[in-house]
Length: 285
Image (tube, rainbow, N blue to C red):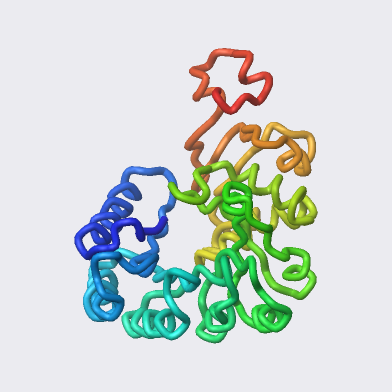
């Protein structure tokens, strides 16, 4: 979960505090990211806001333990490559891990910077080049692709086959946000990955699980069913894993287990009643 919609010190901190409070109440593990560098506020000069980020907000966020990652939107209309590098260096000084919105609308060189500086993930990557892919493949940076944004905005999808065939580890995410991808439906992202981005069902499943876990620094303990890992399990009402992306936008998850405990089941959500929605996988159930 990310901040980035306050763009002033008070609201950005408040968003991160809400994420922390929600994490204490939720059965899910919420991993906070500070995205104060989303866009530059219209009512503040660029240089002044950049100084606020690097000299006040990042130190405060790190000192109070409000975020694990620091993210930057490096693109046309947002932050330049030198500005993003300055923010990254401040984050590293204060021991925050790195993420970046990279190469979405234009190629800026941000994917290369992310790989060289050890970012956990570079998100979007709609405009990557062959040389970018070669460098990402040699790094530990996960390429997090966001098909919901391409669908909602009517934008071209990223060159997924070139990334995968080039040796880049690819993850999938919803990019859930109010402006460009208002959806929480991960199986739909897998469907788009298969139908629009030419990923195989197995590649989409890997991208939505173990690679996604590595994108948030959790691949050593979640993201796959292995001995010694945390028992986080999603059970689907399906005869074959390929049915998960096959059913377009349908909710076929039957049960969710976290740390070995059932935290959600369709039967409980239907209050134990057999309903028509239950039979037909209707999302409204």
